[in-house]
Length: 62
Image 1 (cartoon, one colour):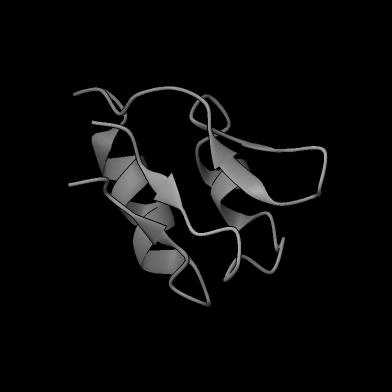
Image 2 (cartoon, helix red, strand yellow):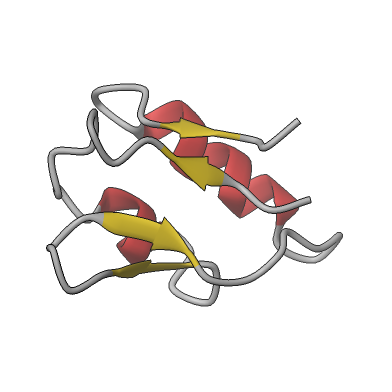
């Protein structure tokens, strides 16, 4: 599974990047993007990023 960031909703707060830098990065537009898949090892952190997004811009991709 790969998380999905709605770029129209993203406010570039960086919470997801700071929570799971191996999964999320900021793109050239300053918006978050998922750059790798969720794994068993990081799925709890990815869920934390999804739950913590202040504008609910991240979904689990399912």
